Image 1 (spheres, one colour):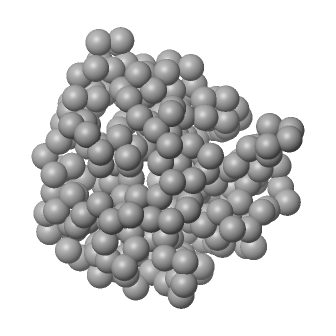
Image 2: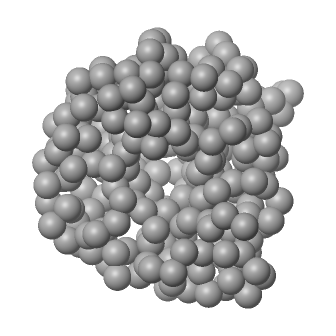
Length: 254
């Protein structure tokens, strides 16, 4: 059985670590470098950093952070938010990122995925998808630009398109569950993971270790990303792995 992964996701705004609720207003929860150092000691498998600045979105804040974080952690780092061109992705990868997370730009030009994969390998490009449930139909609808722009493409059509373009991994985020801590959108994750030939990271909603167990058991997700679960309360990746290991869910020994 393939090893599963637990990945803390860190949202960044103004150089600080923040948390949101359903992609709304953010609250400050600390220093991203200090937090990363703690996660490194707590056996996190990877770290994902997402720049959620709503104004002028560039990769410059991520480049500055990358240099500082690389000095204190020794695990794969994936960075996204503000990647609008291949050159943006290239800058992050050449400055030490192991992976880049691309989202909004892919809807306009899917070739950015192919260019990154061709130059750095498919394992270096993660395509993120933010989905919100239609309140009337319950159908999952994709959004870009930090959840502000609705995209006119079906979820599974987008999954197939980005995989064909060379995506090495998918990052599926539920806007409805973001920061709510009521559990992952298991049906959404299951649907995407079933249709995907590449690993899927699920994000949005983890509030307990039981939520993580459910997502791993009921879907083919390769990894679970957590924010609020680790930011609020006495929870961490070590304890999560110990709990999940009791249910036979395998993890890499760090």
